[in-house]
Image (cartoon, rainbow, N blue to C red; front, side, top):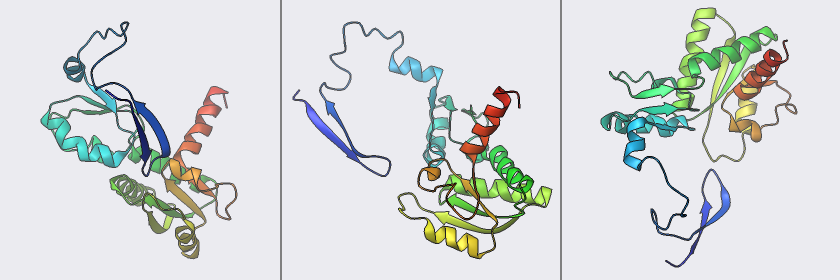
Length: 210
C-alpha cells in the first residue's frame, strides 16, 4: 500500500502525526512472533481504562462478551459497582470513594473547613460528587460551599473558579488529574487540592520514612 500520513486533532491532542505504512495485520517484522493470537489474548483479559466515561460506556459490552477487563486508571465507582453478577471488571488503582474523602480530609486538616468542588461534567465527576456527599454526611465536615462543573475542551476555568470563591469556598478540590495542567495550583488565591499531588506527596513521605 502507499504510505499515508495521518494527522490527529481532537480534544486530547493537537497536531499529532504518524505514517500508516502497512495494511493492518500484515507485513510484520520477521522477528515478531507473538505467543498468543488476538482472540487468545482477549480470553485472558484486557488492561485499559484511562478515562472513566469511556469505561462506563463500555461496561455493557464488556459483560456481553464475558471479557475480563482490568481498569488501571479510571476511578469512577460505578465501573466496578455495576450491579452485575458475575462482574468482569476489576480495578487495579484508586477509586473515587477512597480518593475524594482523602482530599476532603486533607483540606480539613489544613484548616479549610468550607470547600468548593470543581468536577468534570461526566460520569466520573458525578461519581466524585456522590463520594463527597457520602463523606460529608458521615464526617460532617468539611462543608461543601458549591459544586462547579467543567466540560472537556473548555479553555478557561476562571468563571468556575470565581463562582466557587464567591460562594465562600476556602479551598477548591479538583476531581481530576489533567486539570492541574491548566490550573496553577500555586498561583491562585485559594488553595487547590488535587488527587495526583496529594497522593504523590504521601507516597514520597512513605518512601522517605516520613
